[in-house]
Amino acid sequence: MEKRHEEYAAYYNTRMKRFEGNPLYSRSYAAEKKMSDAIAGCSKLEDFRLIVEKDHPEIQCAIALVKDQETARLSHFKRIEEPIRAISSERILKEIDNAKSAMDVPAIISKIDQEVSILITVDNFISGFYFDFTAIENLIVAEAIKDEVPKEWYQEVTDSIAEQIKDHKELFQKTTLPSNRNYKSDWNYDYNLIWETRHRRNIPFPDDIVKRRIEDHKRLIGLS
Image (tube, rainbow, N blue to C red; front, side, top):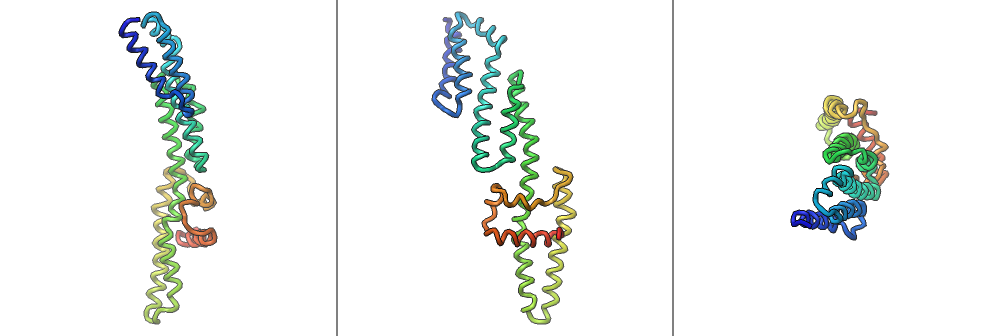
């Protein structure tokens, strides 16, 4: 075996050993071992070039690595109950075998990730609900004290309450709604999403308070 051939064989053997014994990378190990065995089994380097041109083992190695990585990501997203983020891995695993060249692999991944990123963005719009908790609580406090303040301040507090509601309604109608509908044309708050694990864990309040805040939020932004 020529020196250059030996160097290539050593290189592919090292690539294979990166994944040896790692259960997360079983596909990668098998694909890299096939590549390593192929070059080691050639009598001359030219024979390996013919194998590459015929079977494209480098593409199979790239696909195997993607499958191992996305399988691990999918398992993680399912475990932490992130179904929207899991869509990317699910789609990549279904479509990556369509890759016909090394360049196809990142192209397929990039296209899917870009499309799913929009779904993730839209899903996260529900965070506007709990970001508004401070405004809701300020409104609740103002309404609670308006009958207790001195008579000369009553109208000021009442006007402040009306102004807060008016401002938040306008913000929602003129800014939030048009902006979010750039991503999803019929978007509006779907409060059912709040009870899904990925969103509920972001709200450190008991269910009874969250239920009340949903109704408070609808009033704040003019949905009730």
